[in-house]
Length: 259
Length: 246
Image (cartoon, rainbow over all chains, first blue to last red; front, side, top):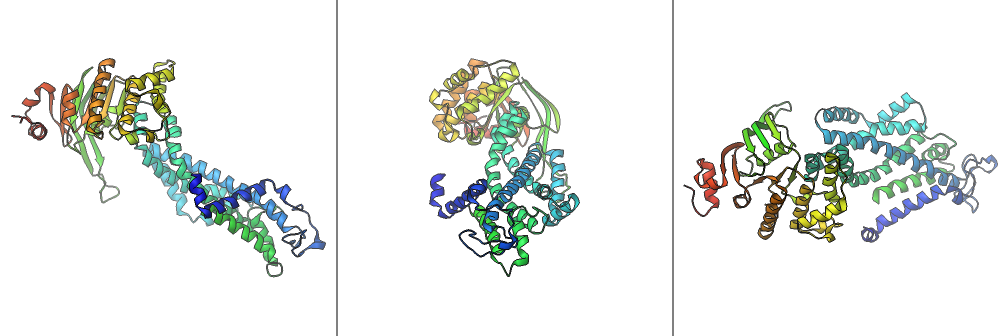
């Protein structure tokens, strides 16, 4: 696996970017030169310098420091979204695919209903119902996206449930929990891991989009989407304030997709 | 040990035009069979005759549409495709321990699993060096022996072999058949041998059941093979045996 990875230079570079971003985010206080919340109106729109490598924003806050601290909510919230989505999708897909019959019919009809709605519109609707808060954006994302995973898991479970090792387990009267968690879950987990890594990129994009629209992370918390929102009014006068988080989101998204 | 009465099994046709269509294909029609303790019954038939479906009914993996099923448990099974018969993430040790754990729970006993695994591997002619190997590190014959060890580990009353030796080469087939004979004698097991290969049936079984188009067309003892009446069974035998059946 490592040999294959080292041969694929693009994947390696992208993985290094993701790894470095995560490390910088985790140890943000070590890398950030300023407090991301520290307002210095006298110093607003400061140009790029050694003290402020990306300049300052409209409130005089260090853009680079805010970018570094912004990694935390962006990655953490997208991870939370993915964990919630995969957990629910996995359980529902396993139940539908393994037990079939009435259980499958009920779960699949719910999934059909969930998938028939345009996802973004539904997320807006759920956020509007629950209130503007980043927690509600995550809940809305999970509610909308679990159905995709459940369908994928169900398809994979159906593929594996007719394999002879599962039939043998059922024939000798092994516990359903053993079959589900020792045979089926590990069998499908690799495929789910690939799907999940692809979707983390989309989750980052979603969280940033909702923060940009003012529905997710709220000011003054540093988050890339929220930073874009704050920067849109000064886009022409101080483009760095918008370009920096924009480039960061795109880089992160592309790195995850390509790696 | 096994008593099946008027078993009917049908599946919904895949090419049904309407999504609410109820058109079904009859796979087993009024199948009845009786297997006594210590018997080795061969179920013979061409592809699509319903042999494996009957095997699934015996194993309890498939509920028939109608009819009575009585099978004395525990029952174990060995499949044809050894490559999908074992979890590719399990080592030989894990594979056999799965059956041992079920046996422990069933009998309410505590087994020395390591010793049991060694003993079972020895029984099927494999050494202790195989214990930590994964399925992809074993040959077809070795893997089928592991499947047999796993089936025996359950200490079943009945073992069902669903084309268990068909995919092995001729030399390994003979070895495995000898092994099955020894195991049967040692543990006084009852075998149900599903196959399309009459040679293995004549070698192992004392009763033969001919299945054609989902129906049992002939049942006889192995000694009475040459006096069978049914045309299909006769033709099948003639196509395999050197001496024609009158």
